[in-house]
Image (tube, rainbow, N blue to C red; front, side, top):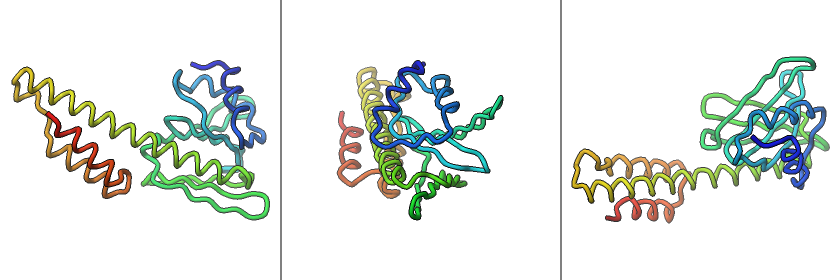
Length: 191
């Protein structure tokens, strides 16, 4: 777990941040962040009549609201589960909406100057996370293929057709470019 000082160092290093009435949520971050999880973007706004902290990390999107004296409300979405991010704004404030495929969450009264950087950072983090997942999948399949080839065991061979179909689905949904798909497919099929 990172310390509160490490959390504050990461927050102060962010070029765009808005932490209106969310210091108690920031103090809670060390309890829920993993050791290798980095804060990439941070802003705050209103949800259900309360101030919420919105944090994009290297692994997930966190929405936090600590009660005045006790209690915690927390929403988290892994970066691979976020389907889209919508934003809108007026002169000074705006709204962020996060879709996970089944539902959406809207945070209003977000400072306008933090909206575009927050959305861009979340999109870049989603892209990196999904690319890493594909890379890990291809590496794992290649390793399993080598092991199966070396041992001659049919039971250890992965189902390459299913893996190829999954990669094709990722490409069709726009999570992989054609070049990334071809690269992952080549790794998967390489002996």
